[in-house]
Length: 310
Ligand code: ASP
Image 1 (cartoon, rainbow, N blue to C red):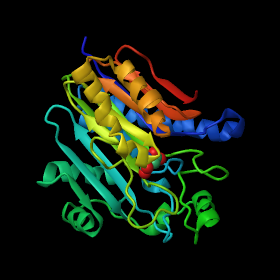
Image 2 (image 1 turned 90 degrees about the vertical axis):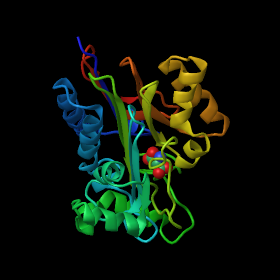
Image 3 (image 1 turned 135 degrees about the horizontal axis):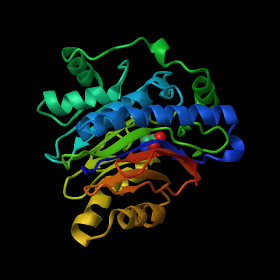
Image 4 (image 1 turned 45 degrees about the vertical axis):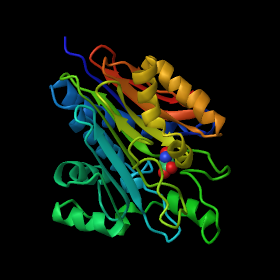
């Protein structure tokens, strides 16, 4: 039987059951279920891991609950500035975009950069110009408006404070970045990550989500990884690549490599967050060092699993 695996995330952080209403929890579960279904359908019909991760991330980008696409947080100017990246493990091709505005599905643009340009990483106005050439879907700023996120921003607007998604009382209460990783029946892995970054971010701040090796990485020799958490720490520790390196050069299993990176190396520099990963055998790891992480997974041998808390 052909092996395939898929895992998705909708962000990690201080996600406590005591703070969640049953209605909200049901909404999150439904959104994760839908995103998982999108990728699962593709993989179970023999489609590619690249198509699967793109489809799952698009579904999460279209949902207001997560800090990516439609649900992106407000930056210091009251705009929605998004970062995304995608990578496939057979060729190690990759595409990334950062600080882009008005694009409905940033992950689609990242894929276009990978497949239709000679570059890996485009930012700002240049990326928008490229998106127009590729006939990507643009959408009005109203599409991204969300009352909850607007109120979040009001609390820190006009200050030097910036914060991660849903951080009302505490600076780092929750991150809402989305991502997907997959292994397809052809033996290829792929990873995709998309985010609105941090509320009230300024100076063109870019997190790990669009940085290949930090927030996203895929290599058929080892695994595919998508991260969520305080981006600065993930960049400094080159987290996604580090997982792959521990497997490739130290012979660690996927789970051991992930645990080393998330529960030891990241904590050594006080970094918080989590990641999702699949290896080239279809194993799945979903480690995080926060209270919770919106996550879901499925494979040819494991039925759909959707989890939120520790
Ligand atoms: N890693 C993202 C960033 O720093 C935030 C998140 O995971 O929600 O932009």
